[in-house]
Image (cartoon, rainbow, N blue to C red; front, top):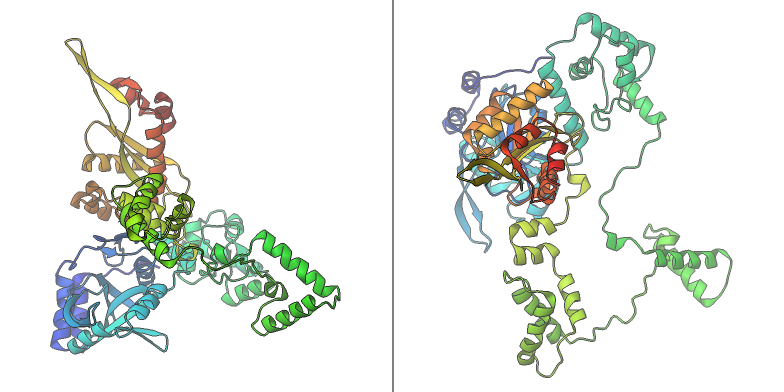
Length: 583
């Protein structure tokens, strides 16, 4: 299967065949003849925005989230019903209520426009969880009717133009399928077609066995490659379960010549239970609580007829009607005295002081903040004593750790203290070499002697540019220079990785450095078909692979003094050499 390739001219001619109103046809033509109406990711806080190099469209397509929009893009690339698509079409005027409930005119930019053989759709992509949040917050704007989401202000605006607006819901639990589609798309880029004799031998091997793992199938046909097998899966000559089987896990991914045979295998194989969702640690009982519940259950099973046991049996029966097990019914945490000993006025004043003073850019120590609170509280409630230092710390712990860090240290500190993303909402990590790499620059803490003149030594700190493979954590290549990061540093990284490894990475992730947002960098990535994205501002955890290397280098030492010749000779080796020289 070769990936379909369409041009703007083809889509413009296709628009003329649609039965569109004049306004709808003008909107479609403007989408095709103009640049995207905005650049995505400018105000991204928790989402990774980037640009996907589309082989079917011959251009780069922007996406605002790699778990939502990029997941849809990969599906559209392999969907035979989708002829073309464009991101960030022209904005339109819509009318919706503001936060005060007042109807106002505003602008709205859809995510995509999809071109089918006989239809056109304007698309908004959102995750299912995000759509539920929006529906709870703005019920007059977002509705779900028979499983179909509708954004009423946009739907009305595009209906007046004669276009249909489609809210596309994305289930983030389909990360395995998304990663498999990425693998199949890469295989189609690398292999145009499977040789007939090779495909015949692969099918013959599957005729002998009902199903085979990818490694066993390739071993039985040595002249084949895994790219051949992936391409046959893409062409639906052989089948696998793309939703549950990871294609790059060759030992445990099974294929068959008939999809019904895979269903039989799934029935015969013990399956892991479905993951219902994330569970907070606060709802998991402690060890002591479980031990007490087991002791109560043992008393019930022993046949004891005391008054206490009769009450326990009654509680088990009541909880059984609610679907709880006997052990769940008997978990009764000790609450103690739940009445507050601190008056509500004292409690409110302590919280107010924490939010106004401790959670401020002054960043005071806890003890200093508590000392100031004691003096401040005498005016607020002279009839009551202030809370103790221990209680003051407990009230601080009740505040959101992210809000406290943000107030005291700014956005970067707040992001560092934020809770991690739920495992169910994460994209699958890289499953093969050079699938996804991280790039960054850091100024080394080495004082390098550049030259000597009139008895004086002139030193500088060099810049290190590094490219890390996310799959293996291996340092693919690096580049040393005394100049500030620029397009030269980036181009040398790509040149070095091509020379050392014989190919370029498929996907490169970076921070929001200016050189990674330059026209040169985007053109370079687009020319070589490399998908590029950037972390949200102040979120170093999204680029953790290369950031860990930077941290190692910073903590390795700041007192090393080398000559420029020694430094660049060290650059010919691996990074371990540089770390050794910094000791």
